[in-house]
Length: 163
Image (cartoon, rainbow, N blue to C red; front, side):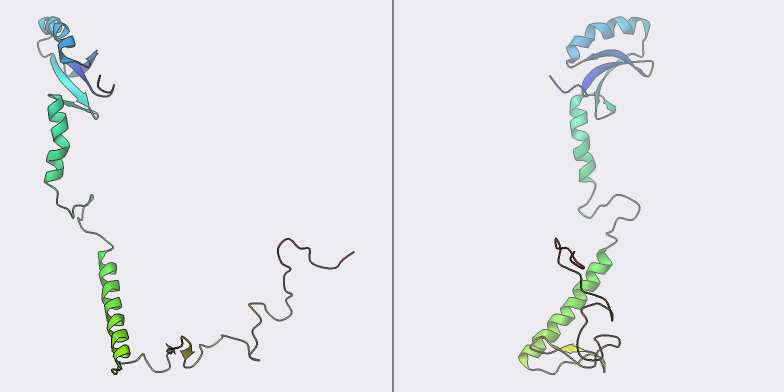
């Protein structure tokens, strides 16, 4: 037995009737009796929310629709990937970086960054002037706390005075 949402039905006057069955042969006697009073009565296959002339036509419809669309087809007005230009730009940028890295490894001269810019050395440390506003004047870091702010106690421990 096919699923309940796929069945044969009788259409009379352009509207579906209550007569439904999984097999076409079950509805043929009813169709003949209705055709005597309503000559436009016909038998249709209902599947996926549409009426079809036969179950085979319903099965073939998705295949026919897919064959006319290419691999790059996208729903909507413009059939292209809107993110593609960003992907292409990233590929070009990374290709340039790869070439610079290869040239550095080979010991060739590479055009460097702009004057005053920071660059990583072979050990991973950065060289060049520090950006303004970074670090503390005494050379010691406050760890993100401003002057006069106390360190928080670790989680699960009470802070403050003991009683």
